[in-house]
Length: 115
Image 1 (cartoon, rainbow, N blue to C red):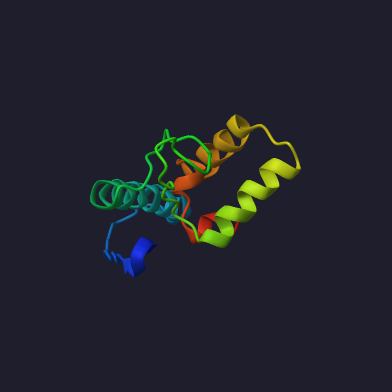
Image 2 (image 1 turned 90 degrees about the vertical axis):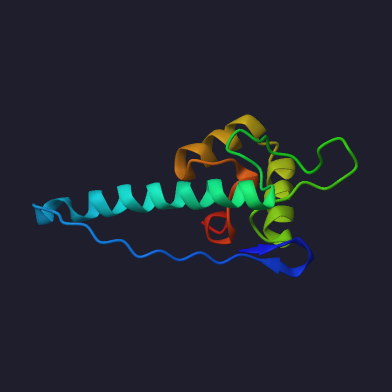
């Protein structure tokens, strides 16, 4: 994950599980991935100060410092441009991010922001 000032973090984990019914592979895989992603996101927020799941969409935090986004600067600019140009409700955009990814718009990583 790229961070400000050319910093980065990398995280890797291997997980094995037994599934009694092969019909449950996709469901169990999705559940485990979501659990692991949530754990990684929590760890990164603690270490890097990335915005939490209840952070609001915006481009400033009122203290003169730019907010940290999980996606690239170009992706951030495009998201903000689309919200402004199409007069989208910021709360609805936040809700969509929460529904699809379980996190705020600013916490979306590069892959999630590109979807």
